Image 1 (cartoon, rainbow, N blue to C red):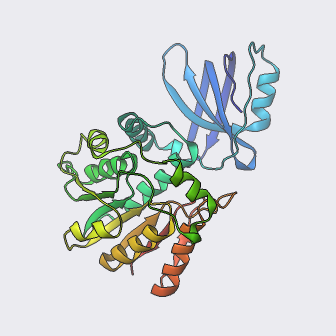
Image 2 (tube, helix red, strand yellow):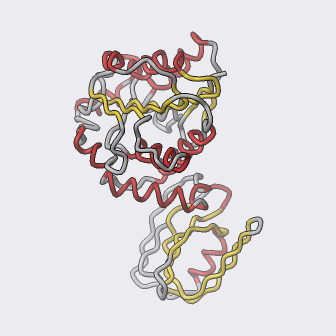
Image 3 (cartoon, rainbow, N blue to C red):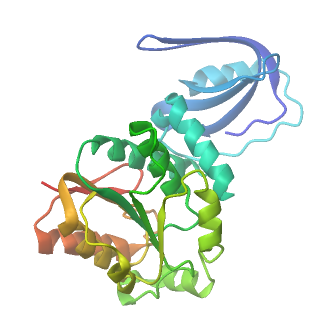
Length: 301
């Protein structure tokens, strides 16, 4: 539910473990529904300018709205159930900084998927090897990877992170990809990027390694090395499967390989990615785990 131009005096108390939040005169941005009847509330104090996010029961907020005079009331709804990341200020700050650098708009599902990405990256701390991303687009997820690598080692400048992308849009879909990727390919999806744009997004990490080219041919440019964490976000069947086959044998034990587009999506828009995951699992004998945000991961044992 999106409510604009709403200012009311209301005191809210939210308890979760040891966490408590009491707010006075504030402006509410009720940004979206959450599962199990919770609402994610973006709150900005009109006196201090400080903002935060927290969660309250939907019925509680409805009662508050009914008690208020709401001029220019405008409501939209969007269903989601991805919110725990908003209780971690460091991630939210890094994500916001990355959006600004990449000049991308926020999407709740992407925000939650990339939160899982950064959490899995942190699990691999101490595992030998570098990090890589196949399918960079404008560099947001690589920005987050480099940000959290710098948290591990303050002097990190991105020199252990490798980025692979055509910077010319999607690879050509095949029959296993279905109709939607063909349509997106014809529309020129993901072409509004370039090496220069990504260099600007990653300008705080001047040591990053960028390799421009089509998968799998571009893999020949990479040095032979081990990886602790790899993120694959290339959308369609052939480059996804090729990326699995290239990177997983080079993963160190304890390393994690993630893929962004497994879903399942309501309209089954990216079936090629699902096929690639399942085929690789079958041929390699590796198990995989699907997250509620649509990304999937393999762990090297």
